[in-house]
Length: 328
Image (cartoon, rainbow, N blue to C red; front, top):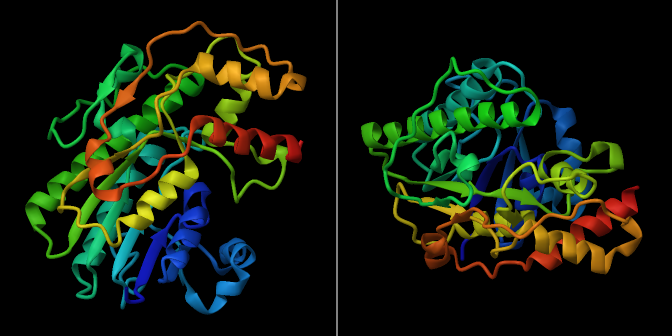
């Protein structure tokens, strides 16, 4: 296997910090997109022995049409992870839709102009493969590669709190994924393009340094332990598996346009609570859900091409809880 240059957006984030390591382990060089030179410090601290294998490209505004033009020079593979966070926005279009759409199209347009590009992977979400009320239809089975389009309503009355944030985030993901599909059909690029659709990602973080920095799905999983009921269906995947699956896309012979759903082994909230109670009785959790059907996602195409040995839910939970206990 030859050494290639791999470009990663969102590399300083929860999934991205793991992906940098997996790409380096696979024998490649990495070019990381950062908003400023100061943002590169985290990667330098995580991978000090690989300093000669990592480059940094400052991209202040990743939504601009030409944002990545210079950053992709000499790059063979692109992973686009940068995007809006569920808990970091307020306005639907400004904070969720526009960053998702513009970021995706910007990276694709820049890749089209760079002859060295062989493959681009756009990291989306399981939410882009389901209707806006899919979470409420539990149990719901998510299918990929159907070509189905899902309607969104920018003027809908979004509920307060996390449910509303999740729906705004899903709106952005649905619109951006359709823009991605339309771009492929229109441009028919010479390089391979795939989209990746992780379910809810949790597990050990390379970013979190204190209990106050707990965020995302990890925050949800931790707070649920003292809740009366879960806020979402149990459809989870280990962050390390997501990273490994992404890294395997480099060498996998995946047809262009393929949607790759990524989720872990089937598990339930009741099993989650039961395992926590048995392994960590000192936590004295309040959460005591009843057994119920859970959401599922068709992963056959991902298993066919990427062949990941998925981490057991118990192993993921243990790594996650041990880290939170250590940080608290």
